[in-house]
Length: 151
Image 1: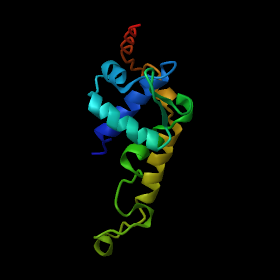
Image 2 (image 1 turned 90 degrees about the vertical axis):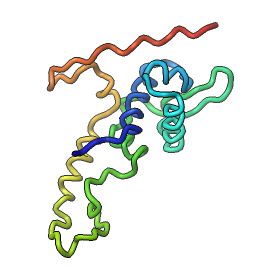
Image 3 (image 1 turned 135 degrees about the vertical axis):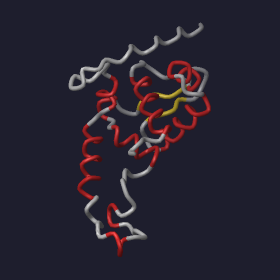
Image 4 (image 1 turned 30 degrees about the horizontal axis):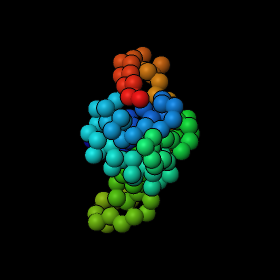
C-alpha cells in the first residue's frame, strides 16, 4: 500500500490552513484549527521552516506564515520536505538493491516513480485547499472558522 506518513499528511493540512489565513499564526492556534496536537504542529513547522516552505516571526504577535503562495507550493515539495525523496522502491534512481541480481526489475520502477512524482508536482496546495475536486464530485466539509484572537 502506498501511504503518506502522518507528518506529511498533517503538513499539507497545516500549510493549507496557514495559507487561508492572512498574517501569521502561532503553532497553538494551528493546533486548534486543525486538530493536530500542538507538539506535532511545532515539529512540522520547524521542519518546514528549515526547508524554506514557511517563515517564522518572533515576538508577542509571532508565529508562522507561508514563504510563498499556496499555488506555488506543490504537494511533492511538502512530501519531500517531510519524508525525503519520493521513491517507491530502493532501486529507484540507481540506488542499490539487495535483490538486484535475483529480481531483474531494476529500472522498471523508474517510470512508475516518475509518473507519481510528476503527478504530485502538478498538484499545488491551492488545489488541495479547494473544497472537493471537480473530477471526483466529492465535496469536503467547510474548514472550521478561526477563533477570534483575544485583544
